[in-house]
Image (cartoon, rainbow, N blue to C red; front, side, top):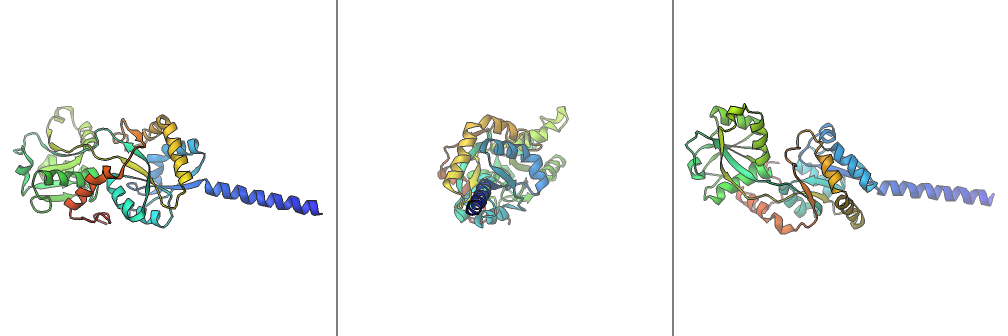
Length: 293
């Protein structure tokens, strides 16, 4: 009887230990610029599956409605890892003390101001008082980068130009029709738009100004995630980067954005000081909240 009781006790302890291991090896992942589980699965499902394979962890997507929701999920331990852009990083690092797991380097990741080739604009100063389209408020390459380009040219983007924030596809159509005089966008945005234009119209646009390369996108871990788990994920990514890059390339809509990417482990906080300057230019010197939310 004692042996039977002791055996049952061991089995119960083993089951509890196994349950704890499974729980400890399960993590939740959010991606700040995608809304809805279906979109997450379509865009980053292959990446999640490959990350599960190389880490041995069970990974669950956590859909977030916006960047603020992603920040709050990180602060209140509802999500463990977040894949986000430079504009998200500076706020999350300040508000949630998120740590960097790895950087996602994107070649030729920069902002630019695009006009029609036959327009009378040849310098950013020519756009004073003009209508300039930009992407979603707070986007690194589609808003913050473009406004900084104007500021660098001694043009106040809050006063000297008329900014219209809209879906970039609509802005592109507005530029073609003459409703907008220029658009601020990322390099991959312009390439995607030109690919859809008739071949004889792909030379109908020119770049008026472009910025330097923007800082990397980042995979970040919440303050509550143990150093051991962070290091395990970081090492797994470093040792299996080719397979993970190939899995990201399977995404439906972001292939152009991550074309030629690589993972980087040497990331410093000061790399993101240019983004903090962009927040100040846009009128948010504290960079403690996401613009437009």
